[in-house]
Length: 71
Image: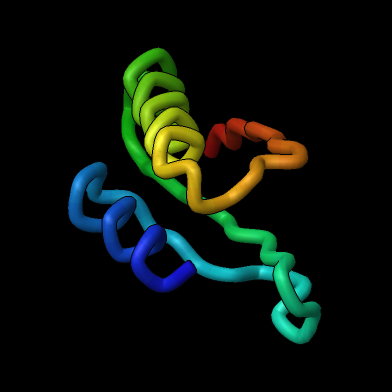
């Protein structure tokens, strides 16, 4: 997980952290956060991060959820 999270940070300039299931072997939940003023750009960045994770073939994405917050 560490190599994937570092690649995401470096390539897409997003915040990444393991947010759940830290004690469960062979399972991880990561949170990815991006901030910007253009919703379509942020959505594109998140889509690219998901594609990169899936393209590594190191992990299996079981589920994902995208949430936008406006302040």
